[in-house]
Image (cartoon, rainbow over all chains, first blue to last red; front, side, top):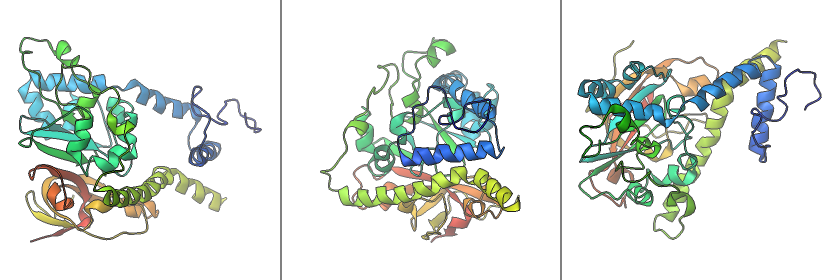
Length: 265
Length: 95
């Protein structure tokens, strides 16, 4: 507990079960958060509401949307046309982002990444998987998507086009996987139960054949012996530099207000 | 809302510049050409916002780039694509 006199404990962590910060960046982040709370920009209670909302979201929401699209072609059309309004029909919301759904077909496989940071439709699908945020995945999926997908167990023939979607601005993406064969008489609930988180990101293609990759090799196997290694290092370093900007960006609105307030007082 | 400067299917080039502030264009697509896949909505311009110059709205486009144009030794089908969101002020018409 810090030495100032507050009735709530926000001294070191923002969740009771959150681990102690171990890196400088984490300490700076938490220090900044404390300053913002002390300056009255938001309260720990407001913060808890946001955290709870994020924790309440899960891939099951995405699965419901997919199942509806499978059983209702008109809904699928609206979903692909304008995801944000179509998910509102089912009671979901992803404001202020544009929600964009990319359909897998026999000829096209879609996969989602955010090379600059870790943009993900969290308010809809919950927290993103750790590998989605890893530099390995982010740098390589745009560079050698077929190889990375292969590590997730998705081996695509050459006549299937791979579309990588880099989520760089105000759009958030979800893949609409293909409905498995032999499910014609299934209920919407049964169909939704087939849909996995990885299939919504595009790192799983076939549904109903296990639960996708449990621990993708993309995480376990840092590459080093590839012909592209040098080019990839440059690519990864450039991404790193932009990540620094991105971290600042996340905090900037609150920080600006705080600095202005300090300056005026 | 202003009219879109570019149309779906139009060939565009992504500017090759590096402003010393936060921007949402990764370096691997700077200077590359592609076609407009779809026109999206208007959103706050990151570079102005980060400087505290308000948040003027700019149109976002999705640009589709062949993977073989991005990476000279790309291992995969020539049909493979990368699609990425780019703010209007980062785009120019290309031949």
